[in-house]
Image (cartoon, rainbow, N blue to C red; front, side):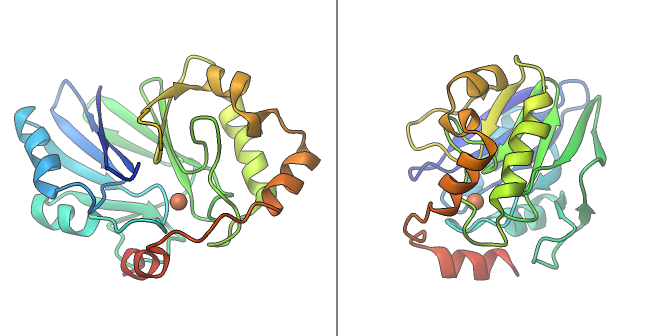
Length: 222
Ligand SMILES: [Fe+2]
């Protein structure tokens, strides 16, 4: 599987996964901050066919281009069954598997940032949405977030993956696109917190609402 990262100027990350045998592809978390043509050009260059567009969760800081891209390509839009948007060609829950040519995409429930957050594990990598960021985690103070659930996602879900698993988050504000589970366990300060300290830290963590919050939630729930 080839993984192609896309970075928006505001730190949003999307990933194109291409199965090298069948040239089937999946696109995770496409954003309107990146031209649709940019995604399509990368697909065309690899002679790949887009099978799935996957949303890791309902984004609150940018408007997704998933509906546009599935319309343009015939791909199926994959969301968690509890995502507010009714536009789901495939409604998934944790434990399900999608086949992408010779590559298996495992859907993992990783709630906490939102209650419908999923991660996708494939070929030694995990695409974590905002559940696990490089050196951080997503916030838990809106969209039915839960610090308790995020603690469990970190320690009983991500924490059980092998240390060399590559981590691809949905955001990074320093230009990075990947880490590993081992590196995050070792240096991510949120991973280092005890259960009680994690809950206290996250429950007191109320950064400003994203600039596009209302517009993004409305558009991404259609
Ligand atoms: Fe988010």
